[in-house]
Length: 84
Image (cartoon, helix red, strand yellow):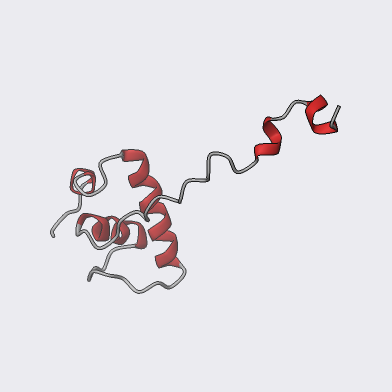
């Protein structure tokens, strides 16, 4: 890949906000010493974008949803909670 462009990355991560977060997180990992997933002589930020464009890095799956009734005691009014 001669040049990495934002358009290349947006093919893998369609939301530009998610792309910026993912790129920043990956660049931070690379700065801390993570092993690069593609060969490149570029700085960590460009390397992170190259990895995203190559499909080697993607966002983590969504966090599990909380149960809808995780705190049923909160739905009671103050008088019901006191037992009167």
